[in-house]
Image 1 (cartoon, rainbow, N blue to C red):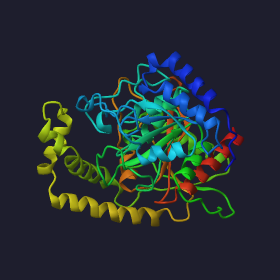
Image 2 (cartoon, one colour):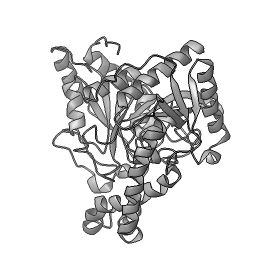
Image 3 (cartoon, one colour):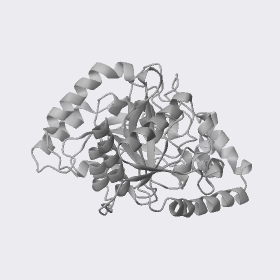
Image 4 (spheres, one colour):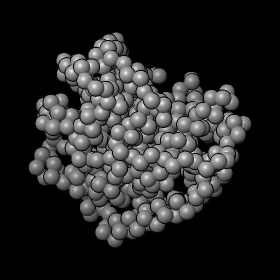
Length: 411
């Protein structure tokens, strides 16, 4: 990994605030910006020994606690609520020298209900994707180089595709979710957006994700998996994936066609069963104690207690467990698997977008990185996902770096 050079933290904060002041009235990435607190923290950092993320300004999705800052979940139920302590994922970044600049907009409870107000910086009429809308928009528009996101379905990877940035969802359970609103305990994962793969990997190191062993000599081998929903992609989305694949072949990367994966076609249905049943547990208290302020979408999740039986939930978990080991056997010997990140460009409006192409990987607990390698209609971004088996996170990032380096040389 390239060793970082350390700029003045205070200068970084001033630059971020200037960019936010110039752009955020249109982009609306932020729900709260802590100008004074960020500058004070930056001055303290500049007077101390630099850490691995010295002076990096960070946006935090507003379902994650950051001390002294609002924690609204974009819900009227938490209007005015202020977090008393950092979530561990935030505290760890602070300890590494990052500056927590503020809170970014999100779909309500990172789940459903109210959409984020954030716009896609590439076309303000379009969504940046959800639920991590503000975090993706803030990085894409150059407000901050790093922002925290979460993913329960596709809420980190899909916005990265729509906004044309790098997004990383680590293996489930490797980054602490304490201090983050629970939606579905078996699925919720803290992820992040960054300006490049170098910063993605620096954050991996800060969170203690194990370094990748050296790759065996030989050509990079990437599986090409179009998914069972290939025909539901837009023409531009299909062309984007095929175009990246063609460029990889020219660049000397071996592509291995993967026509199907074990149980994969069932995983969206299984994901929904788990999502709704665990979501029912997460929102039951609010449905019982403050039903009038809780959006109807969350009452539907509580109603799932009767919609999805215990037997159906057991089936979904058992099939997901089998699919995880089946996936890992199927891709043995590959450096990564490439698949669509989204069905096409960002849609008009503020909806989160279609999660079908992301949910199976989330249920498989696999690490996923979005690479901003393609464009669709009007030059708008379309990303591709690289996926690896559970806990091969740093190996995945290494493969992604090699892909980008080879494509850059080939171009």
